[in-house]
Image (tube, rainbow, N blue to C red; front, side, top):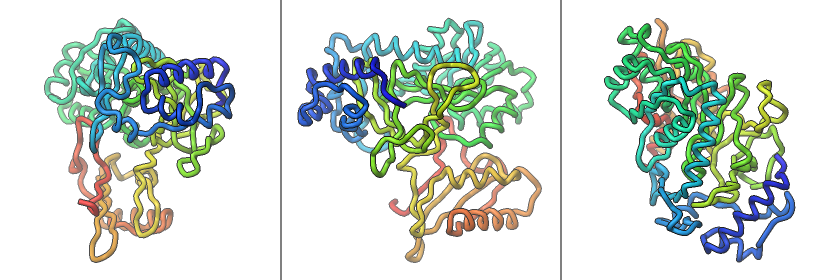
Length: 411
């Protein structure tokens, strides 16, 4: 995507704010002697920002607006080291709500819908983001938050929820519970808005078929507002993102050079109008591509492909680089396997071993299925994993994000 004149103007405004606030990025710009940009080339010479920069700024080093204008903070769900604290002004909260409202509208959700929100509230951006957008839309919000499946199902039936907002893991857990209890006829759900983790086509199909609903992928990250910066339309040809609020480029994660539309690489995001904690060229480590051409829905907003994984998801086994998404693609080609899997990597007797646990939903010979999966992985990726087939429902389900890769080599 080429940067437009208007986007350049907005980036220059952000540069001014960052320099005068003396934030880490403002200092980077001062060191590079950059006060403004005038072209695509100038923009591509701007330094990147990284998660580590944001952690180093803990607690409030990212605050770019005066403190009297800051109305809220959120924090990323980082599992390592210091969390990232993102301050928001009232305008940031409002802009985020506006983007989220567009997401709901793109999914055909209206003010007559009843939206059940199951992601977490609090410092996490999820629950409150889903709620803010739904209230802007004028829909009825049922702010459940995570867990307590019994209560979730009771409210879903009694209040006739029509939209479910959840992580894919929790949507699957709810779908399985509804099947198990035989209460599908009491459920009024029509749509699901699913965010926060990468998920495969098989899982998507399972949730959609089991609940009889249309599913929409929502994209976002705490550092850049939160969920709601992009969503797919009913044609499901990628996620439209709001380029009047954010500018997205795709870079080669090795050379760090921008890639042409259509090529897979790492998503880098620049906020165009953010006040509390603007970010320029923020490396998300999410892998995707910009889809060229127009969407059949006629919407003018550009599209990102479904997130394929993360650059830091890569596992090195016996000298071979592997992404979980490659394993997932292979598992999806076996109809007798469920959408759930777990990869465990360990170091035994001086060598790395990968064990893959999969669930089967059929009356099949477990050993034969394990051998066929292992042989396919060997032929496609180049090493033989140990495959263990278990009965459906045995692998863990989660109310948040399901941990699918467990690397025991460094425990």
